[in-house]
Length: 485
Image 1 (cartoon, rainbow, N blue to C red):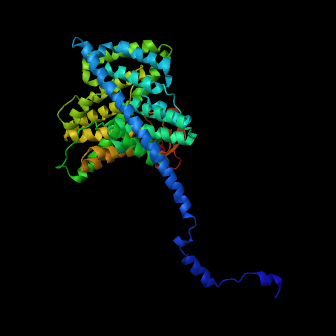
Image 2 (cartoon, rainbow, N blue to C red):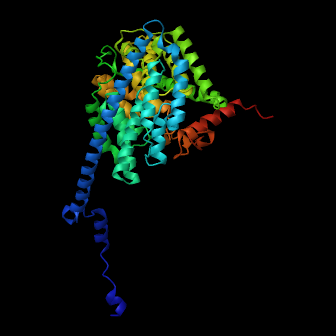
Image 3 (cartoon, helix red, strand yellow):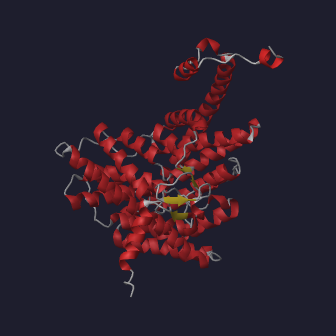
């Protein structure tokens, strides 16, 4: 026997090799080593983020509570100042330039509906935010809403949360990654506290950063921060608890109605987004004259409210609640008037959030659709405020959870379906231009991922070669082409 033969390992019979391939030995739990090291690290990390998340929730909840108190007090003061002699919105031509001056002077990043600055800070600066943003944003929003600007209150709450947690990160000397996570917790706590919906508000704070992505590394502390912030702030959901509204509608018909409504709400969200974008482009040549733009915006809003009614000014929570309960019948064009009022307020210098106007547009467009289809108004109004949130902000998961949190079980399930449909129909657009693209909404489209929605153009969204969409396009071209001689 040669040396080579002696060292060569014995070959297994063919049958045994096949048997080993067919029946692999499963791993044994006893073979795992150092499992305790992994779980020790998990325990340390969970404890650390439990303290950070709860601390963020307490501070942001208190900050949001103070902001909401100042909002209510300022509204009452302005009403008392007017003494019924005139409507406060006639002072918007003065209020909007004042907001522009405050923001340009002390915190330029607080411009607009505020959440944009927070998203940009998370993506570009690991969540680092100037501490001046929170008080400036709070004051500018209080002025805008007190005099009738059509904005929401969640933008300042998000910036309050982000500013407080960014300051804490500086004091604790956290790493950039930990700062980013803590700031996201602050955003979630702000949304949860101001919405009055702890779970969907917390998820919204995570989901709004990306189109099509959820950062699971911050899921636990954000949920904890959202729940604690909600309890500390003490705000209840801004919408009434609704009763079952479709007991006489068959399940198959209900599914078809929900899908159709989702398509309509996706198109309404697209109208809102494009209205804001179109007005911003229209005003771009006048950006060197911001105070004149604000003055013109205030005059336009005052004229609009005097003609259409004051219900389109401010938050409009009473209109939302009346539409959802069916106690208030509004004109079919109410959602269009609110879109105009919100776009003008935000693009001409007003400060505030965009989500409450989204709820208004959703509820009133749902009511208009219900009258058109002969269905109960509360049903489609409820679908509308959930679906518009999903489509306008690209947050279908948070919107679906909000529907289940606020609505009866069956109605919440169908509202979630409407939200998912509207999310697809609106396309790769959002009221938040700083939102990053994380997926393509259709297999028939090639979308350049990683950039922001504000950078989107025709070169970033293309029809995928070989897709059914391309075949349909080519079929249409072939049908239109003149016959060859």
